[in-house]
Amino acid sequence: MEDMRNLLIKIAHYYYRLDYTQNEIANKMKMSRQRVNRLLKKVREEGIVKINIEGYNESFAELESGLEEKFNLDRAIVVKALESENLYEALAMEGVNYLVDILRDGLKIGVSWGKTLYHLSANLPSNSNRFQDISVTQLVGGMSSEDGPRKSDEITRMIGDKLNAKTYFLFAPTFVKNPLIKEEYLKEESIKEVFKQIESCDVVFLSIGEVSKYSSSLKTTLIDESDYEEILELGGVGNISLRYFDENGNILDCDLNKSVMGIEPETFKKIPEVVCMTGGKEKGIKGRT
Image (cartoon, rainbow, N blue to C red; front, top):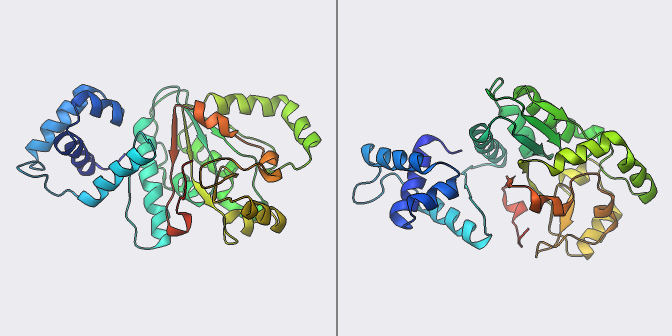
C-alpha cells in the first residue's frame, strides 16, 4: 500500500472531495470503518486537511479516481518515474507495499512472470511475513532458459522463500502447441494439483505484456515470427499471463493462446483480487481487459 502520508491524502480525497461515507471508504480500501475513522482524525491532526487538502497531488488522485471509474476497478494507484528502469522499481515497490499489507494467515498468492514481477520479488524484504500457512503458486509454465530471473518459476521461488511460504511450481513448458501432448500434461496429478491451487488463489499478481518485436516474449524466443504476425492480424494489443487480447479485452482465438500452459482467462474472473502492475507508453492499454 502507499506510504502513510499518501494513504492519508487519499483517504482525505475520498472523504472531503468525493463525499464518500466512512463505510464506502472502508469497503473501497479494504479496511475496517474504525481504521478509516482513526485515519481521518490523523488527517486533521497532521494538518493535511485545513480549508483545503494540503500536500495533495490532485492530478494523481483525479487520475486514479478516473481509472477506477472508467475500468470499474476496486482501486488504482498511480506511480511516478522519470525513466523506464525507475518505472519498474517504482511499480515493484508499490506492489511490495501492497503485498505486505494484505498478508494474513492462509493467504493464497498467485504470481505470473516478467520484469515488473521480478523487481517485486527482488525488492520484497526477507522475513517480511509473520503469518502462517501462506502459499505462492506459479501461474504460467516455465519460461525459456534465456529469460533468467524473470522466469515465472524463479519469481515464485523468490517470493515463496522471502515469505517462508509453501510454493507450487507448474513444471511444464510455457507453450505446448500439440493439443494431444498438452492434454497428456494436464492429466498429470502434479499439474492438476497446481491448477487446483491456481483456482483457489485469493490474490494474483501480474502485469500486461505488449505486442511488439521488442517484447520479452519475442526477445526470449517464447513465440516465433509466425505467432507474432497472427497476433497482429487478429488485432492483438497486449497479453495477460501470455494470453493475447484485442482492444476490447477479448481473448484472441489463435493457436498460441490455446497452447498456453497456465491460468485460464475465465479463472481471473473467479479470483477475489487481481493486482495488475503495468506502465510505460509502450504498454498503453487501448481497451478494457
